[in-house]
Length: 296
Image 1 (tube, helix red, strand yellow):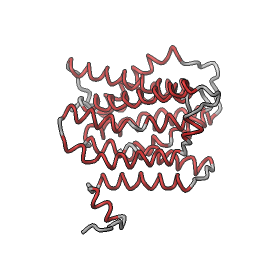
Image 2 (cartoon, one colour):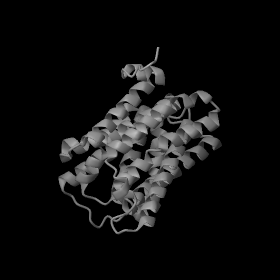
Image 3 (cartoon, one colour):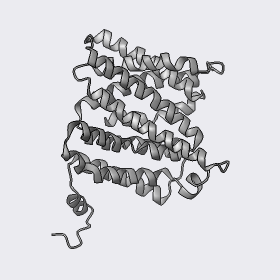
Image 4 (spheres, helix red, strand yellow):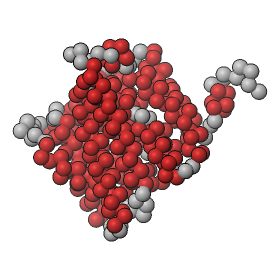
């Protein structure tokens, strides 16, 4: 899961390097990633036939994944990347709620404070200016910003549902699940993509090939494997590695200068991830941070 989220955090760098429209990038990611995953599965063996219930979960997961992408890209245009990114990262909470409802496991809520800490870290590290970015958009239309935030929220819910659907497909190879879902996505998105501005420059097609094979094929295999093996709380918390890595990419490759608030946000995400993986409770976390005032 850590490897998958690290790869996810570097996607933006290669999308920028490709110079292609978002829809074209998503289409080629689906096509190249889906073909590579199914080719790997064919070479390794391990194809399993689905029963009726598994086919339903596969298609529901594919639909959730595709609509999630479309909603998120639309949210970027309607509001801003900072607003959409922050709102989208409520998806771990949606996942926690869905798992708690389906598993009826009250222990899941023990990790809620660490999720809240990580989410606060995302808000701080994003550099979001509520007064400037949310209360008014670039053209002064609040309703447009609100619509973008709503689409990002819907995308978060759909991503959480796609995660849940994958967990329902136990016994099916992650490469088979992800490969089929990505090919479904390619078929659905093909009519929407505009390839008229396609460039054969090595940086453009090289970036798209990497996005397809590494940031889609390999990443989704790792991610779906993690979805089937990890507890829900680990999936939810480790998801916050993605915005942390994306911010580090901005610093390293685009010379972004971080404010003290953004550095604080990054530290909060790291603490939350570490606390979750080490199964700390709030008392242990406070002691670790040397905030023992009155605590015995």
